Length: 257
Image (cartoon, rainbow, N blue to C red; front, side, top):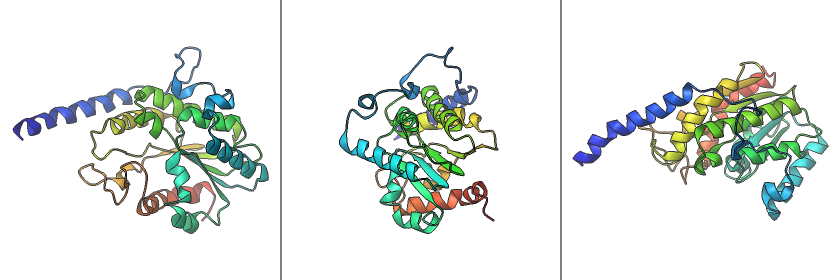
């Protein structure tokens, strides 16, 4: 017990050093001077690269393209499984907040930043010009062990691609949600460091940054299974917290009073 208590201050100092180091770095935006890495591989890749011909992912991708083709979408949620599961654990909350707002769920289970880049390049935004896009991506990159700078570069690449594809759409860029039961969980440390880097891409006008991570944690930084049963994906209660936290910004982005 004495050894554990003695080690805690050093662990806290180490985590603080990681985040401080990240805060002093900016997102890499010049492809010519930065090394290529997995988090932002050029998105013009064949489908076999993106999803290895996995049936359900390709079917969902086609479904999302069809939603875009039909048009009439004002609000898009874009991201990975945490976003996709608005359709499951978050269904009731979605119906309360977004069903009447011409909202579309463009989440894909398992996606990394590079997959979202691929989807943007392959039809997900063809035919739509949403007023607002809620972007949450990078969790799977962090869990996979990618360094914070690479994760941040991937997120920034997605933001830049969206600005190219739908320049009239405003983006709410969310900080990667906390994951792992305890604050010293490696993936959470990487995510916090990545957030500190990619937040700088926000200009406060077309791109807004918002960190709502504290909504999901206890005072000591731990995560309750009531909020995230597996310490990563949200429960219905968690989706309620998400919706409440972003509602003022969503109203503003959609031009609602």
